Image 1 (tube, rainbow, N blue to C red):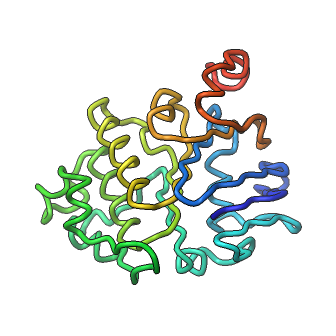
Image 2 (cartoon, rainbow, N blue to C red):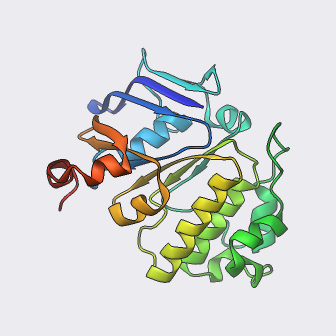
Image 3 (cartoon, rainbow, N blue to C red):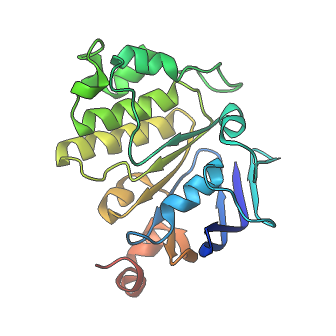
Length: 234
């Protein structure tokens, strides 16, 4: 579904991503792990076209090379992105925010509807007419994910979905990601919360200083305390 090869990215003269390589299979959940500032968010932004990959980078989505394409063109191919800072429309209601994200259905996937999303995010069902600015941070995070799903993506990039959320909301977020996977979608998420990642992901890629240092299953990572201590401990 997604193949990243020799992905390099810069902020000005600062070399942030260095030959990042990732493979994500259809229907898989891959988590990018690493400390704050490791390059996880930049990796997602570079895949989505929000940060321009350096020449020679390759990002293939569903067999189509997208490195260097504008974000709107990448989104139209079925790649969804949920930013860390949410960016909901605070003056629009829940239903209006969802309508903003609507795109046509994709072949082979059942289209997302508000009713289907409310089954995954019951909190939103109780506040259909509430403006986004009058919602809690956790509710806004749910709305952001739901709005992205209204675009009927084939793959979703989730940037730090559990950050700053109450434990009960984190539990609901984990259940939502598992439901999205069960619906046939592919998910790539970035996380610092290893416990949360272990609940939702199939495989992990550890990024440190813009370099992929380790990849493998979550079971393999559990058996590598030295790796966790070196790259994930605070």
